[in-house]
Every structure is written in C-alpha cells, then in structure tokens.
Image (tube, rainbow, N blue to C red):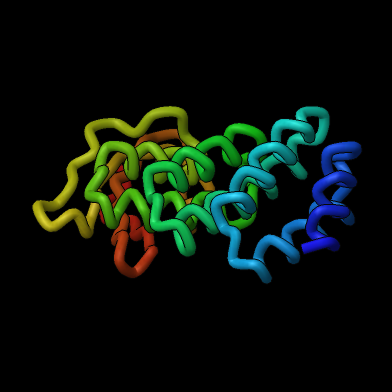
Length: 171
C-alpha cells in the first residue's frame, strides 16, 4: 500500500513518465485494482498528447484491461478506436476492435475497420453474410495480398472468423 501511494504521488507529478506508469500499473495490477488501473491509463494517455504513438499504446493497454478484466466491451471499443485515431498502426488496437465488434454483431462498424485495414477510405456496397462471418466488398487497395494493379476495383471476401481476405474476381 505504501509503495502504491508513492507511485501515485510520483505519477501525479509526472504522468508522462513510462517508468512511473509501469511501476504504478504493476502495483495496481498486483492489488487487483483494475478500475483504478483503467483510470491511470486514461490519465496517462491524456498526458501524452504530444506523443501519439505512446498515447495510442497506452489506450490499447486500457482497452485490453477494460475488455479482459473489467468486462466493459463498449468502453474497450472506445479505447481501441481512440488508439487508432492517434496511431493507425497501434499494435493490438485493430485486432481488439475487430474481435469486440464481431462479438457484439456490430457489422457496419466492423466493415469500417476492415476498410481502414484495406487502405481505402470507402468500400463500395459491402454485403455481410447472415451469420456475420463474411463480408464481400469492392476495393482498389494494393495491400490485400492479391496481385492487382490498383487501377480498377476488385471484389474480395473477408472471412472474419479466419481473419483472411480473398480476391474473388478481377475486373
């Protein structure tokens, strides 16, 4: 308890210090004070406004905690979405977001995440299967693994259970 109090004071004095954050996080985790730990991560993320990658990484930690320990999937979704706003490549954010959106059957939101991953601002006429497992969409993205020239739209099917994207027609 005494060490945690010292870490709390140090964190209040310098919420951007990763050493202090790690020490406080370890103390709160050991004490199983997960709600407080989520608050610490939120405060740290807000203090890191000048470092988008560190801010995103902290938001991902918060999302994981909200998802796994506090059973708050909606708040975890918000944390993962915020992480991606600060860093498109935030490790674990897209995966957590896809997992939760799939589990909550939020198909349109899931399509938006897939669009982002496909490197396109818009996917035309996405069609979601009745079971929510597959999404058929059109894209010109070059990073979907298919050998395309990017000059015309191709049709793909994304299998959300297998986390795969397959080219099904070439225009």
